[in-house]
Length: 121
Image 1 (cartoon, rainbow, N blue to C red):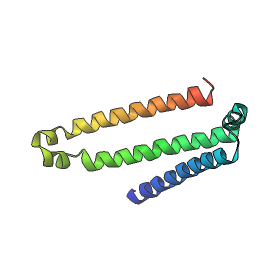
Image 2 (image 1 turned 90 degrees about the vertical axis):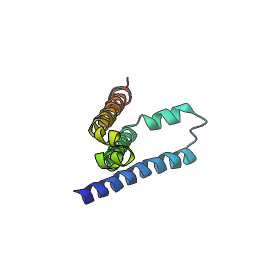
Image 3 (image 1 turned 180 degrees about the vertical axis):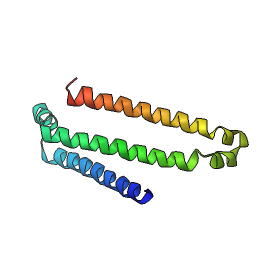
Image 4 (image 1 turned 90 degrees about the horizontal axis):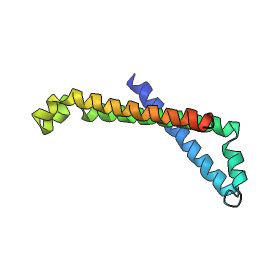
């Protein structure tokens, strides 16, 4: 399972890179600075909304995977116990709080994507 997650992390990184490069290339080629309607038409087109949604989902998955790895590496009883035995005994509590904040961020970002961007607020 670890190798599959590693490949998935790299796949989401490639999708994020493709989106960023596409936006940068579009900015250099199209005269977005001179006319707002060109930018608005480009951003609100269906292919761009689909690409942005894929980018958003990839960013969330990439971020959650990275944060899960940070949690697994640093919020363990062994790692925290190395600094202090008291901290080590609270490792499970720290992990639960960390996961709660990750879930909260995912919910807020999902709300913004669905209700504000895709459905037009």
